[in-house]
Image (cartoon, rainbow, N blue to C red; front, side, top):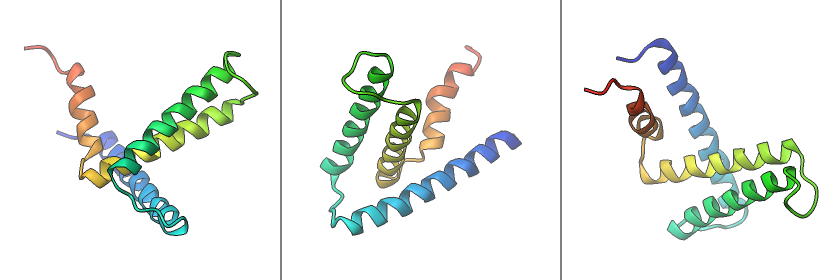
Length: 109
């Protein structure tokens, strides 16, 4: 049974998915990108690398300067591409997260 906070969270996630879908469509049209499996997987890998680089720079372990904002932006990009990939695959990412992560909160029986 879903409570009000879960319902609100599902609506928030649906709004984010709508946002990334719209921006993803604009991005693909603007740069004439054919979104295929290699593109989706490549973009997620690229963004994970950028998250890693921004974090390491903040820790003084990378070349160049980074800000907290850089890390936040790269995390936003990574999440956006994960949401796009899930949407493209027809995965209800909210349900998958609740099932996978929420299962740890279920009492062991």
